[in-house]
Image 1 (cartoon, rainbow over the protein chains, first blue to last red):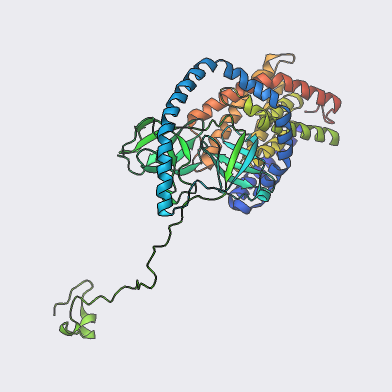
Image 2: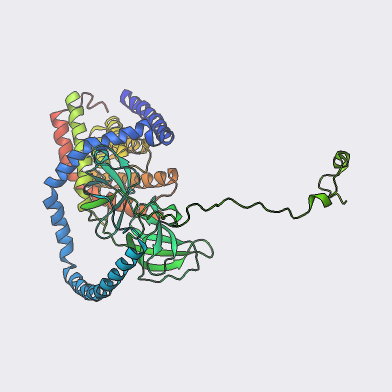
Length: 320
Length: 170
């Protein structure tokens, strides 16, 4: 009986404490006490996760190998076809690349692919099945900051949301709270792409009537104040459907990155957005606005008495 | 009592490390087991609601500190309540049943995961879809049920080596 009462009291205290913690977390923001607690937990657990991950990697790779075994033949066939298509495309791209370099040198535009990057190893994933984050083995000591984009060889992985001195947490692009400016690589139509957990990502175009077709590639855009360098591959259009709101369309995008097999990622330090160079030959020019002549000659407009102004009804127009 | 507390704390630490470092590669339908919740449920089944609340609160706090999109305190609340409810249901289980603890673990996992998904959706601006909550709840329930015998063995060893001082009163 005593134990039952004690349990009830403890449970009541727990409910009150949990509500207090939730409130404190909401009000604390990015520098709150609980955020520091999160940083501490990430820092303390990082070496353990790293060690256990390395120690048990044979088991995890064995799991991957077993699941791969069933699809090897079909995958091999698909890859052969893809290699042929890519070989054909490479020949065209070589010529375009040379032409691009020539034009860039003519225009003196910096190469936007020159990004400062840092390679990181993935040491853990989020314990929650409703959050898509990873922990990487680099942090503030390596120069990382919140908001930095993270990519891998296939394309966009996510952005840094938490930084401790030795580890960082990355919000994956498929997380429902992830959002980024993106555009179609073929038509250039811009929009906002959102993650949806295990389902394909959703691209919401600014122009709902814009033409976009299945198979088109979607890349990041620096439009709309996008934080990501322009041109990072995101995925391919899988389906174009009518949106939930009238006159809108949802473009479902299959990401290029396999988020279940992230081992190494690259953190991008620079934004990669070309600064607009100043116009040449504009030194010494006066850009101040010239005086605009009045539409009516002030001498021809009769002056009104102060008394007349007072007597007028609000909104009435005085006729001279 | 201190030794038991330390051992249970070490178990929770091991659970969270395995859950984040090993099980992402061993998913069931794309979902991972909830080892923190399973540890709570197994100890609550064995030792009663008071232990369930204590371990549930600690496990929830550990999980909350490693999640960015849900507020700290949500796991404390849900895992603590789950521990209490499982502990209170203990007298209604058949004493030597093999399946009852498995079903209890599966049921508690399904309900707790669903509650976590729904409440975190309500508290966040934009959260997971209802379909995903259902899928995750069922997958976690199944996975946790599969892992229950192994964790029961560990819990039994811990309880035998470090018995509760108030055992028998709960």
